[in-house]
Image (cartoon, rainbow, N blue to C red; front, side, top):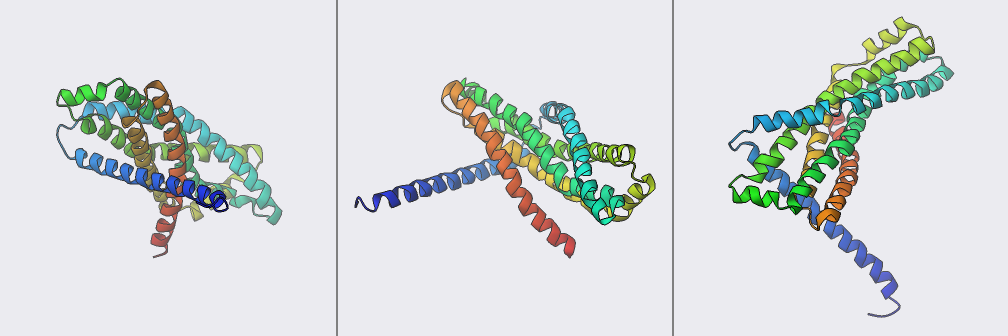
Length: 268
């Protein structure tokens, strides 16, 4: 290769290799998700493990989701009042905040909190089992790891994320009410009336659909990274870090895709 072209070709080669690696891993994750979906319909149905994981994902994440929702509603209300009072529409703050929370903020922020807590824990647990050969031991004992380890975690995330989104909505509305009515003394009747007029059930359906989709993404990324961890303790740490990073980015990307599809559906 010509010395003149080498500075140009080397970065392009590196970028191309990175893109190929990313696409390859995405395909591997989709195949992993497909195998998990097939395993969902196979016996035995491990209800006990599912309930255990639901408790870990749902109840275990309740405090951090409630805390995030409370201050999200409060801060967003404070900023919205400051902007709306310039045009004399302070009474619209309740509907403005809750529409944004129900459609976008609650599923995205709740999922990010669950990614940091549950996704990392799943990757760490499965990664430790992989490097310590516990998963290999399950296969030797004729216990299918996909059915025993992956399916309960994926279903629990898909079921509990919408529940956490509902809790986030409720707590965020209380935070918004406290700031707007109790602190800034906006008329309570106007605050509640605008919410009733402008907030529709479909706004909450958006958040629930997104929550279920994000829950599946969190579980698939965490399980895939942990299930395929290599290299001992260092490999487990890398898998955990990659789970949080990839899961968070995937949530934002999927949020855009789902928002576009849901808005088109709503327009029809």
